[in-house]
Image (cartoon, rainbow, N blue to C red):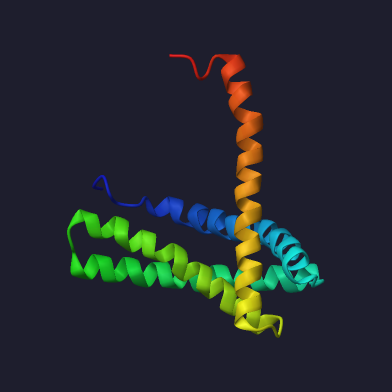
Length: 146
């Protein structure tokens, strides 16, 4: 078996981890969708509806990423294209998420876009808060010294 071959015994583990990751990611995404909808539009979304919305958006974004990956593999372009292809996935996934939010909750596209923007803003705030907590701890433990 070559270095890039997947061990067939690990395939069930891969599917289990992928399913667990999708569920956990959708749970976190549902919480953020509810918060973003509340902040952006003063809209109360039930947790189950938010979970399904995030799960569908994840499936759609995953399908688009696979299509871009297949197109990349078929074209076998230079290495710079790989970065460009993945950078293009971010705004595209943002728009897909906005469309799915709008369609599932009977909102205009612009309201769905606004909710998606608030979700992204919440992510940024959470990442900054984690960095504010983690960086001093790492520094005090000696993890940031050279």
